[in-house]
Length: 149
Image (cartoon, rainbow, N blue to C red; front, side, top):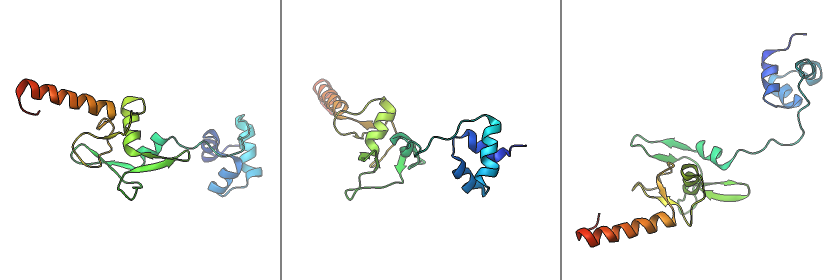
């Protein structure tokens, strides 16, 4: 028996026999199950596939702008804060962008620090510690030069 290339591709991607049969409009017992056996692949595990991470969902909801920033195309709260639900919790897009850029959760709120309202580009956010350091540097600059930076 020759295994159809589209069936083999979906089997290797981990889809169940029924999901493949629905997608390709074939008989799961006559087409998909024999192909799985011939390819030596184990039966698909029952249950739902793991959900995408918050970072994966983030990348699906942003688009770059011409000026080097990113804007949010997903859900916004009534206050206008961009974000998404993942794992039963609401995550702001700023917090996810900070985590992508720094590899850790921010201390306190993560807010855009690039000067553009609602920018969600990773690397354009500051947490509480970053803002405190920036305020301290501004006061030092003022003490030295007598004007703000």
